[in-house]
Length: 63
Image (cartoon, rainbow, N blue to C red):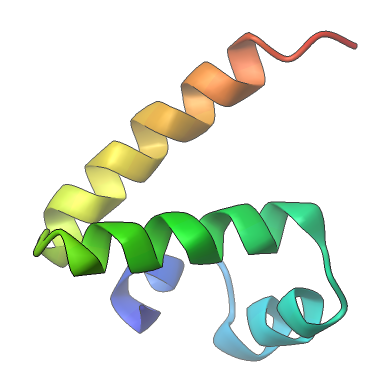
């Protein structure tokens, strides 16, 4: 998890703080990271997949 968070430019302590305070973005990232880990993805694969998913989510988000 720390390698992925580092690649996404998140500090572990800030990420965990936001996660326990129910920040939507951190919850989504946490779920994605755990799901990819359960699928046996490497950190590099997980990072690339999260970048793609994040871009799709942000580009399709209606404001």
